[in-house]
Amino acid sequence: MDNPVQAAIFRAMTFDHDILIVGGALNGPALALAASRAGFSVGVIDTVPLETYKDPAFDGRAYALALASQRLLKGIGIWNSIAEHACPMLEIKVTDGVAGQGPAPWMMHFDHAEIEEGPMGFMVEDRHLRPAFVNALENDPNITVYAPETVVAQTADQQGASVTLASGKTLAASLIVGCDGRKSGTATRAGIKRTGWSYGQTAIVCAVAHEKPNGGIAHQFFMPHGPLAILPLNGNRSSIVWSETEARAKECMAMDDDAFLEVLKPAFGSFLGDIKLEGKRFSYPLNLTLANSFIADRVALVGDAAHGMHPIAGQGLNAGLRDIAALADVLKKAHQTGQDIGSPQVLARYQQWRRFDTATLALATDTFNKLFSNDNPLLRSVRDLGMGMVNAVPSLRRNFVREAAGLTGDLPSLMRD
Image 1 (cartoon, rainbow, N blue to C red):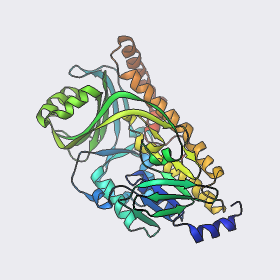
Image 2 (image 1 turned 135 degrees about the vertical axis):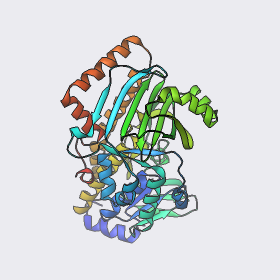
Image 3 (image 1 turned 180 degrees about the vertical axis):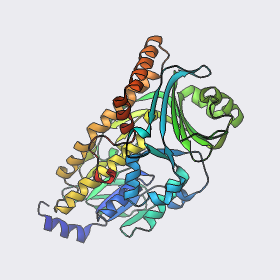
Image 4 (image 1 turned 45 degrees about the horizontal axis):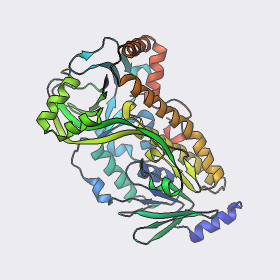
């Protein structure tokens, strides 16, 4: 397999696809489209029928996409179909306090005007993003979707990799990529262990309508039990990500809408006027989970399969999309030079590029959550003073804005302007 000519012949004769992607939610389709544009044949395996993702009903879920992630979506042909539904994030306001008592006097305020590239990011609703991915997959001749299907076994050797589906079908490829979430079966079957812990918190996710315009401003309000993120949507609406203790979140999810709103209002405040729920409520247990390796024999992990972190900075999906852009770069360059895309040498380049960055980000979100999710008077004074100092220094504010926009570090080609 060291001979690129032999490798090419072997693929053409025996492989169903160059790349098999396990998981079809968001990261899986994004990688499939990026790989297709790099000239690869791709198979996407998902447990959910594609039609399920086309439901146009608004269910309250939305995603904060950094500017770098928006560039990737544009590069893989998705952005134009969702642009009119995206709400630009023009400012971020970070405060600390207690529900019902208002925020502390110190805060951090970040404005997109401090950078030249444009908005820091965009809020996009799930009901627009998922159908756009499905339509793109269905219209790409290099991509085959196997759904609903479940992988029950996988193997890898020097010649290639294969998966066996619950239907009995076997598929072979040069590389298997796990996009199958925090409990990744791909990682487990490859023998990759995980490190992590529970936060004892649950995220409540929903959307609200309000009387006043949100102005494209994202708010992060840190409270003793966890942060409340209020993220702008088009119209007089906002997406809510509220981290609470597991017990309190369970109580809130059991309430009817009116009772839940009465609990939410003291934390939300009155700055946008009266609020009412739109769509459903969802809850997700919060934990930190890092794969001990992002690669194994002919296996690579991306997104939550590689790293699951606290939503405190809204970087979960963005980190996954950055994995995808980096892996696409690595595989494209390997293919152009005749290398086996599933070889240890090629996959090591991907891991070297992404593992340190994601571990650093996970540690940062973990530290922020521990620092802010408490009511210790000393820590509260220190963090409020720190926010005031950051807000007073233009260079620090600019660095934070660029970080929020995903413009720092070694950017993959799909995330460059």
